[in-house]
Each structure stands twice: as C-alpha cells, then as structure tokens.
Length: 420
Image (cartoon, rainbow, N blue to C red; front, side, top):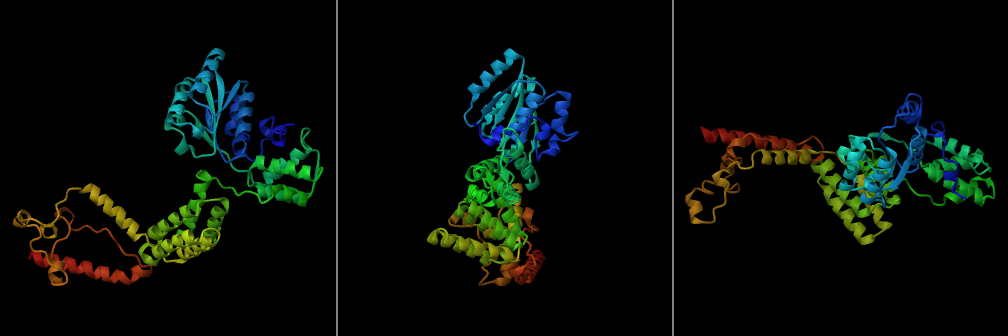
C-alpha cells in the first residue's frame, strides 16, 4: 500500500492547504488554471510544503502531459530525451525536482527549449533560487515562494487524512493531533507519516501517548548547508548584534541540537566578536578564541557550554563596528590610491643608494623626539587629510575617544607648524 501522504494527495487546487497566497481566488496559480495558460515557474519552499503536488495539479489542470525528473540523478542526457519527447508531442511540462542540484551547464541545456516554449518548466527547490539557479533561467521562469504549513493548516491536513476514503479511517484524540501538528514544524509529509505510524501503534486509536511514541525524539527543522541553516546562523548573529541574549542562546541551541558543527559556530562567533563587539570590548575576541580552544579540549557536550558562555558574553557586551568600518574604508582607499607615494622619511633605507635618494631621511623617532614625530607626514600627499577610524562611545572606545581626538589635533598642529 502506498504511504498515507501519497494516498491523500490533493486532487484539486482547492484541497491544497497552507498556500492560499498562490492558490486562492485571483492568485497566480489559480489564474493559470482558469486561463489554461501554463507558464514556466519555480516553486521555492521547505520540504513538505506541497511543491510536487502543485506541479502535478498545474499540469493536469491545463491538460498537458508532464515528465518528472529529479536533478539528484538526472543529467543532460535525460534533458535531451525529454526534449525529443516534447518535439514529438508538440510540447510538454518538465517537472524538475531539486533543480538547485543542476550545475550551470545542465541548467543552460534547458534554456533554449524553455525560451522557445517547447518545454514548460516547473522547478522545485528548497534552496534560494537567487543563489542556486542561473540568472538566465530565472529570467524565463517566475519564482513562487511556498510557506511552511502553520499549525492550523497542518491540523486541517491531519483531519482530512482521517476522513479521506483512502486515509486511515481512525479515531484520534485532539491532543494527539495538536502534538503532531506542532512537531511537524510545517512539513506536511512529516505530519502524515507520524499520523500513520501513530495509528499503527495505537491499532486504529490515535492517543496522545501513541503520537509521542510515533514522533520519538523528533528532528529539528534544520538543513546543514541549506537555506534554513543560513537563516538560523543569520538569526543568531543578528540577535547577538542586537543585544538580545535570550534569542541568541535559543538560536545557538537550535543549531547545536540540529547537528551544526560546533567549530563552525565558534568561527562565526569569533567573527561577531571582531565585527560587532570590536574595540568596544577587546576581550571579546580573546574569549572567542578561548571558547574554541575549550571546545577542542572538552568536546561535546561539555564544550558546548563554552560556546553558550561566549554567546552570553557577546550579546551583553557593548557593541562597536568601528574597526570593521575603518577596515572597509582602508580597503577602499587602497584600491582608489594603489600607487600613492609613501613619504620619504617613512621608507626603508637598507642600501647606500636608497639613503642618497633620501629614503628614511628626517624620520623622527617618537621615543626620542615626540614633537618631531607629530610634525612629520605619515600619509601620502594625495591622502594627507584621510580619516578612516572613528571611535564610538561604547566600552573601551569611550575611554580612548578623547585620546584619539587629542592625537589628531596634535598631528594637525604639527603639520601646520612644519609647513610654516
């Protein structure tokens, strides 16, 4: 017998739950069916959001034959075979699952046939098409975003599966359905699989206990290296930057429990220490390195506490991106003025020729001649008034901001004195 998810798969667009922004009255997919004009598009959404179901319904709804391929095991040869079929039939719909797994040359092989209309492409991906699908192919196919099912939509799905002629024909406690809907985390396939297993365990009676047993320890909504992975690390970084310690800890735990490499997390936290805490608290970087070393030494799970301690410290630390901004400014200045002449006093003079040319001549050694040191020129002529670094009023920088102001005033005074 086919799995429950296949047996109760929607037969019409109206039966699809959770994607009303695409399937409702006046919405894009509904309009295509009503006009019976199917154009190429890419469905981007998490697992179990209905990508395959929608592809099938759209092809059936306009009366076109569909060939389904998975980019996991298909290649250019398979595309050529589909093109041959399309030429014989006067066109067809190609449903390409996991389209992001096609490389550039494989995606390029589709272009002329999609552009000519011989193939109507329906792509499906869990990854951001902006990064994974060639711009040329994206320009020929609209991208529609599918949402993970919310708990209400998942509950409707489960209730329909219980009453469906090909469904379970079982009785379920409301608490059991709520538990499955929550644990599914927006994945319809996961919800229906858990419901089917719970019915089997409960011999037709789906109790809360049977639902818990079917779910087991569960799996977190986490995809190493995928779109959701980067959403989580982005949320962690932004929570640290925004000083929200509880959110930062939550996202750290989500990633660790989901199987993220702790040393990857340690590297990202070290980046936060230099990019967002920066010179407001120079100890942040030291603690980041110590946390990485502690994890190396302790391993899991004890070493994870060092990462949690680091997240707390970084989230509560004063914030400054002054060094980050100063470095970007310095890079831009170096790219704009790559050949600006270094003042002669600052140049190295290891040979007699260089000394005769004036290299190093007149250099004022600060410890012997502070006033002369402030009077000499450090930047090239074209960049004499360049200012790259600005201290903030956060943490350590608040203490050095006045010193920086005084130093710059002395350089300005010394420069004027030297010119006069």
